[in-house]
Length: 308
Image 1 (cartoon, rainbow, N blue to C red):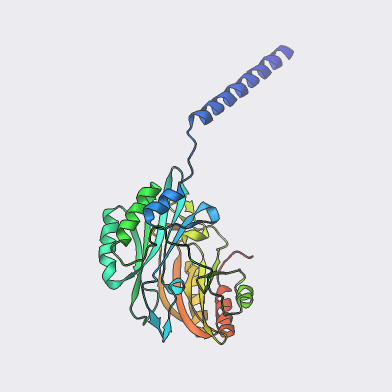
Image 2 (cartoon, rainbow, N blue to C red):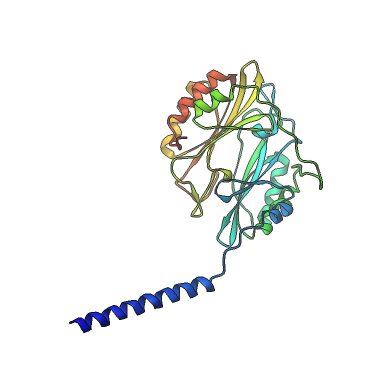
């Protein structure tokens, strides 16, 4: 009996050693996944960005060339005219997503070139009513080598008047101060915002992960409740942005916004294979900040978001 136990123990040890050696050899034989070279991606795209949550690299491309007005208000580029492209490591490849702000005459040539370059179009729509000139928003998706994706996107945007910085251009100076009670905004929405070229931007993550193509998306990939505030002076503000909603949340949020004098201007999808299926509700209003925050806070009460 003792002999059999001894043999069994030796066999188990031998199997464990063999398993360890096999696992070690496999690990050594498997090449390490190289981190993307974001500087090379920035060079191919034509503008640098910042690495943020989840390792995503996001580049803002505000349409500073456009002078768009709505209800007599000139919209700041980072308020409602902010094109962006973001990249996320995806194994040995990169996922690219973006939202491109285009004028009507730019839509077709940009779409054609992106399609020829292998970039998918996942949505095309308006965000606002009655803006002059009208702008349209093209959502894009791609997978592959980061530099090749960035090159493909740049070639598409080159057919628009989207501004790119000149080589060697000096970095932008500090943004103008926000003439609003930002502490009240943070308290009402349960999240801290940031100053983007004079616009107060608040992004709030959902409580459950948002996935596209099986990848969990961090906030820089467009996965958040996004609310922008443009100061108008005298404690007033204009607001726009989009609520990212499940089907069950859509109509409670829509009703609440409308009951509080906030116009719902669009409802649509941004992605093709998102999990869960999500709908994006855009909105617009301008009024006293306190009144706007009452409506936004009431609407947020119907949305499953992370608590700060």
